[in-house]
Each structure stands twice: as C-alpha cells, then as structure tokens.
View 1 (cartoon, rainbow, N blue to C red):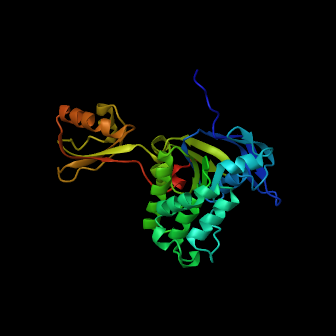
View 2: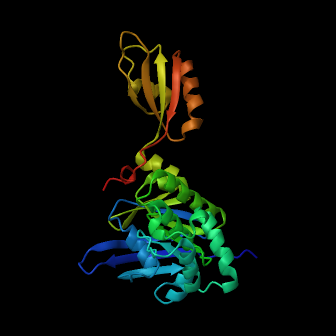
View 3: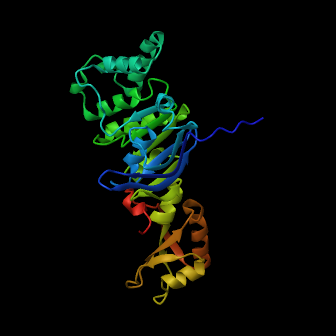
Length: 320
C-alpha cells in the first residue's frame, strides 16, 4: 500500500493585519511538499517575512489556517518548532561566543542528546567552512561567515523543515555562493526548504518551485523557467540574415515562419539585417527556425539564442 504524506506546509486563506491596520497578508494560500525547495519571491513589503513569522509561530494570524507536518501551528506550537530550523534576517548570534560555543549552546537548548553533540557540532562547523575559526569570537567574523553559521545552526537539531528569510542579505558574492551550496547540500539530503528572496536569480538557482507575492497576495506560482517565460518574456532567437527585400518587415517574416517576430532591423545599403524571433521553448526552436529561413532563400550569417531576463523579481510580477 502506498502511503501519501501530507505536505510539509499547508497554508489556507491566511490573513494578517498589524495593529496599525496594515494588511500584510490577504487570504494567502499555498503548500510546500516534503523534500521540496520553494522560493517565496517578491519585492519589499510583499508579505514574505510576515508569512514565515506566522509559520514559525512568532506571530499569530488574524485569520486562516497554518499546518506544519500536519500539526496546526496555533494548537501545537512546541511540536511545530521542534521540526523547524529558522534563520531570520537578523542572525541573532551571541557575539562574544565562539562558533563552537554557539552551536553547543543551541544543541543544549533543543535537547540534542549529549553523546551526539560533539559529532554534530563538528559536522556543522565543517558544513559552514568554519572549522579553522571555531574558537574565534563571532564578533570577529565577516557578515558572510555569520550567515553561514546561522544557517547550520538551524539544522543542528535535525530539523525537518528549513525556513530562511533573506539568506544572502548583506553578504558578498563569494559568501552568497557558499550559502547557496550549503542549501543545495541540504536539499540533496532531503530537507524541505522554504526561503524568502527579492531576487529571481536566487530563486532560479535553488528553487524547485517559486511562489510570487505582492501586497500580501499570491500573484503567480510555478517553476522558475515557466515564470520567466510567462512574465519576463520569451526566448529570443536572434539571426543575422542576407537576402531580404527592403519591403520585407517583421510582420512578413513572422507570417513566413509561423512565429512572432518581435523586430527586424531596417535595411541599410543592402547589407544584412537582424531579426529577433520569439520562442517559448528556446533551444529546440533554433535549428527549426534556421531551416525555415534557408528554405525561404535567405542566408543565415549568425544565429544566437537569448534567454529570458532580467534577474530582478520586479520584472517578474504581473501587471497590477
């Protein structure tokens, strides 16, 4: 018999209004499957941080339901927190402790068996790349080192669900890549991960699925590739052509190809012209387009595929 496990996170009609009457979430609903990595993407003020604070029980919702591992958060907070590792935007590390001491303290706080603490702490220090600095005070660490330590601290107690709020906030590119690699390793080990981000490139690098929020509402959901194609734009096949007549325009070329041609450069002294042809599938269309152009009697001097962009999340959001 196949046992169907409930999602790790189930959110239904979740709303939250702060005391100043600011509506941070507005009937938000989504789920995260076990073993899935999901990016919660949106601009500042979209409700991402509020959502994770509600999931972790830091805040109480105005209305709606939140379940973690089938436990209703409002009724089973201790069970829920035992399963969650949470890294907030603020690393919340005791600056006068060493990394070794900070992890040992966290292990004690979460009831890690004493006979396992030494091995687990050593593993976390290695994962964070901080073994060589384990006895140095945290206040001497760079911002990236602190973020990496905060990340491994969240999984020291064998958490099932990792929640990361702006994991690479304020770190340099090198530290960001180290943090991303940590998350990939955890994903490969089967952890469920929900992370908040402002950046599509971070979501694209790590997420199986992306949930886009704005003004507290869900506005889009899908894989990074599908969202880029739908909201950022299609692939563009860029070809440099010889043999076009001066009167041939983008509409004519699109009709011949059976594909929308976004633009065709103007003729200049009979020289080659550049066409930009829209494609939803990208690489698979490129050889077909070249073949059709040759059949039309045109010479393809150059051809390239331009992927959808940009990397920022604002371009991803639908028109509001």
